[in-house]
Amino acid sequence: MSKPSCPLCFASSCAFFHQDKQRCYWRCPQCELVFADRSSLLSAAAEHAQYQLHNNDINDSGYRRFLQRLATPLLEALDRSDLQGLDFGCGPGPLLAKMLTEAGQQMAVWDPFFAPDNTVLERQYDFISCSEAIEHFVNPAQEWALWQRLLKPGGTLAIMTKRYTTAEAFANWHYKLDPTHVSFFHLNTFHYLARRDGYRLQVAANDVVVLQRIKH
Image (cartoon, rainbow, N blue to C red; front, top):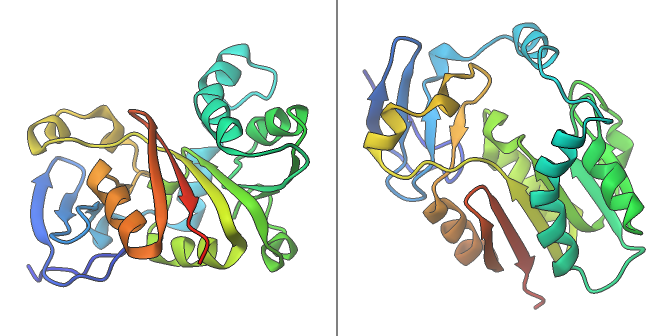
C-alpha cells in the first residue's frame, strides 16, 4: 500500500494510523492531520444523502445551545458589530448565521449542497465561521487556501470540529464512524496552521478554536 501525501499540508509519506471495518486512516507527520483513505470516499450523491439525514432544525433550542459554543468566543474576538461575516458550510439550516445576525453582524452563507451561491466567494470578510464542516473536507488545503483569500487582514476565523487526541482514543472514537467525516484535526494541526500562516490561536473549547489573523 503506497503512502499518500497529506491533503492539508502536502507532506509526503503519511503513516498508517488506524484500520476499522469501514476504512483505513493515515496520519501526517508534519501537521498531524488524520484522514480517511481515498478509496473509501463517498460519491457526491451519497454524501448529500447523508447530510439530509442530519437534524439541523433552525428552531431547535438544543441546536442553538450547541452553536453558542462557537458563537460566544467568536463574538468576543470581534471588536465591534456590523462586520461582514461568512458562515462557510452552513448546511440546510443556517442557524449560526441567524444567531450572528441577531448579534448585529452582517452574514453571508455558503455551502456546496445547500447554499452554492459562489458569488459570495468573490469578496472579502472580517470573519469566517465554520461549524462542524471542516471534518467533511476531502482536500482541506483547498478550503484553507480559499479562506486565506476571503479573510481580510486582521480577520477572524472560528472553527468548530471535534479533535482527536491519541491513537488509542481514536480507535474508540464515534466521530470517525460518520462516513462523511474524512479529515480529523489534532490541536497541533491548528498550531501548525497558525504558525505557518500568521494567526494567533485561541483554544476556546475542546472542539472550538478561534484564529486571529496577524496584520502585516
